[in-house]
Amino acid sequence: MVLIQIIGFGFVTALAALLLKSTKPELSLAVTIVGGILILLSAFELLEDSLSILKKIAEISSLSSVLIKTLIKIVGIGYITEFSAGILQDFGSNSVADKVVFGGKIIIFTLTLPIVEKLLELVLSFLSLL
Image (cartoon, rainbow, N blue to C red):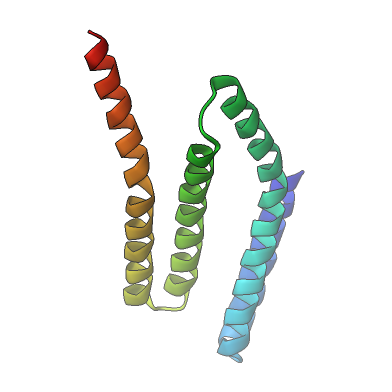
């Protein structure tokens, strides 16, 4: 059901943006952004269930909640970056879109460093047991 809603928002947004692009390009951009936000809000309905499952997995496996939150942030930053870059590319700003993607990658890299550090500590602790 949510997939049909997302696809419907996508088609309506694309058609409205296409019709407005030749007459009112500034409205075309606004329609694209609003349509994208509606699509994201529709997808977030499903994300709520996934987050509760991730919390259960963290409790069962005794993973740190900070680790789970960091992983969720990484995924969120990736999606938001890709979404934003897509809008910029739709409006011919490929150079700016590339820089947004690069900035997102730097942020993701920065967030992954503590995870890599914890993983290295875990491997070293296993090696010291041998």
